[in-house]
Length: 359
Ligand code: ATP
Ligand code: MG
Image (cartoon, rainbow, N blue to C red; front, side, top):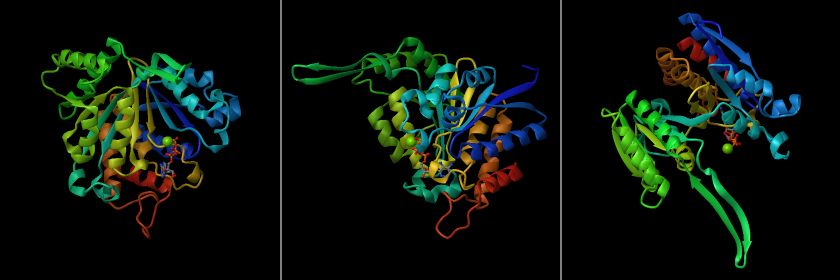
């Protein structure tokens, strides 16, 4: 890698992926121009388009490209065209494959309420005002991967087993990241578990207490997962960083995403111990609106902000992108998904232009 040059792998993928990624890339190019950075953007194939053109959802070339990059920007994968294929030819297999290939263990989802979009949520405005949560989900352990697992026939019928498995190492590294992220924010970490029932949660709590000793400036709160699910909709403002294991995180992050009421607005980051982070919108490839230039590019543009913050060490630039998005919304600009009935809507490209103008 050349000195001072940041290499970014861009994987547009399927459906609206190419349209929204294009706008996010233009934001990166503007940042480079204005702030004097050098970004080397290299494009790769993933998902359905890779199946069509290379016969696999994750070509080796794409893995190599990502491994040699400082960060990966991903659009979205999948669509009805590939839904019926065998597992190894499914677009989603490509996505799972790249996450594993670059060793991502933490998924970050910031849940931010934009004041000018509060009316779009199902929650009351006074509950939502000022909500700014970072959900941190462990990605490598838990029920998804524990062994043994399987199904067998017994005399009474079928019996099934899934195993919730965690190593001390996996728990410690995600909690440590949680404390680091909380330290850079409002210094409050809510660790979510089910320690009244689960052995894995009891170890989780022990390790949380142990790691907390290295972060005396961060307040640690333990919360049972059932209570956390309730508190997220009752009083979401109490949360700063929320850290939890794989399955709890899967459920709570979708719940929290919906309190903001806008799937086209939410970015995500996935981080590993070394190697590049991967940045993508939380929404899918939206085949129903693909190719129409109506998709909302803001989740992908906000994913670029996360990339600037977490992989490129450019906090000022990250904040500038977030402020530009906020300004554009405050000025009343809307894509179709955000516009009220009868309200005029911008195209994908026009929304991208507005953000760059604000930047
Ligand atoms: P996946 O399984 O990949 O998550 P999905 O079918 O569950 O995909 P999405 O692809 O996210 O979900 O689409 C859900 C709905 O949200 C669709 O109606 C889609 O048009 C809409 N949608 C998703 N992303 C956007 C966006 N960026 N802008 C506008 N609408 C969107
Ligand atoms: Mg989905």
